[in-house]
Length: 188
Image 1 (cartoon, rainbow, N blue to C red):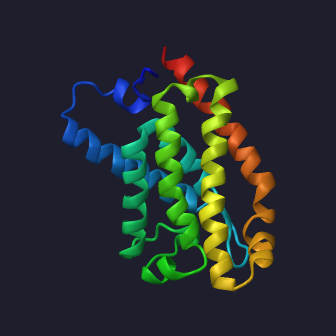
Image 2 (cartoon, rainbow, N blue to C red):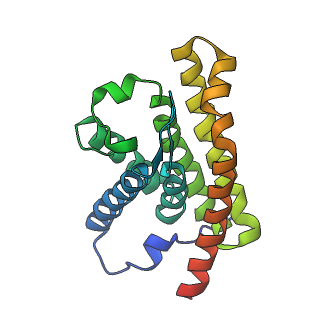
Image 3 (cartoon, rainbow, N blue to C red):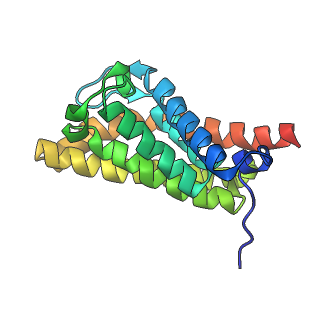
């Protein structure tokens, strides 16, 4: 049996009520992703943003349930009109457009990354690549699949929804794999 370890968010806020801690962490996680969504290189139909980097970190920092809930809160807030999506976009039209698959992938990625972080995989540079790689793949699976449906063409979905992002996402993945274990060492 694998022993679960506390994620960073649980370990360092021990004296706050669980309900308040959950709400605050979930909201801050969603706002962190919204902030990084504003880092954008416009491409069509899917822009390059800092969102995926933020999703990786939020999943690892908040754990499976809080991480997934932070992504749901992010999507909800953006869908209700807050300028949270890439480039300050918002509204329900985003939730039916070309990028909705990536947004759904954020939820799954944060959950799985959080599960792996709860098992301590994000605490070591050598093992932290595993949850971040898996999370990135999850985002692509959902995002490219939905884009293929929207475009009615799988090869175009790969061309426009995967290939332009690979180098940037590898860099984000490596930076996340270095930053988080370093944060654990710094805190200890």
